[in-house]
Image (cartoon, rainbow, N blue to C red; front, top):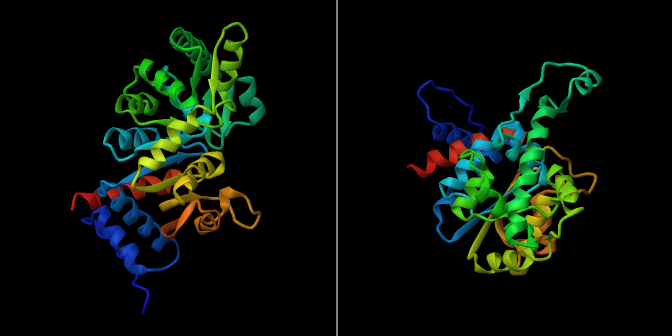
Length: 306
């Protein structure tokens, strides 16, 4: 079969473009098309629960509104996130922002109270506001609980956040659970440690397991959509060992497989650990998730309208 070359038309839809990627049948185009079709099918299938994992700078990298809208429309059923993405969501919820790099030297940035994430800037003044506001929230949650699971803790935070563009607040409103097994490894974790110096307040990671395991057992099918790798990817896959693994999975990563790290491991490897079922529908897309995930989501949403 010959490669069918792409043809761009000013009147074409995203769905038309994705069809062309499917027909071209080669290289990354095929993988993007596969991921788009898989996400669309998973959204349409009422028996499928979609787990979304967020690692790397997805929220400061521009995906905040996309994640929020997927939750709001009922297209995501459970989130597993790094602590950093949660922190950056709250920074914006409290009035802060993320800024485009102007190419300054990093030592100059430090002198001016600016932190850099690749070509994204954050301001220390925004984090100062975050620190003040998160301490107030801790106090309100602590009035109700002395011991609380991470998932319930994040739910309570979401109920207290008023920014309608916050994915944490939207998840709380829609009762979509958020898990963050590495919560201590972020600014929320640092502020928790400070708060707990003189307050009786305990965050329990173990208490998450009962809720998560029940959720997995109650899910007829699971599609995992994993942006980046690391702890969120592993927690997503490992939680589904209880039922023999995920039924389908999409991974978008820039990491390589040769070093043996989970972040770069092809999803097929998960079958050997029963983290993905035999015969599961899996696709690994190699590239920048802040570019590819919006494209895949746009294509999937266009397809489900058909």
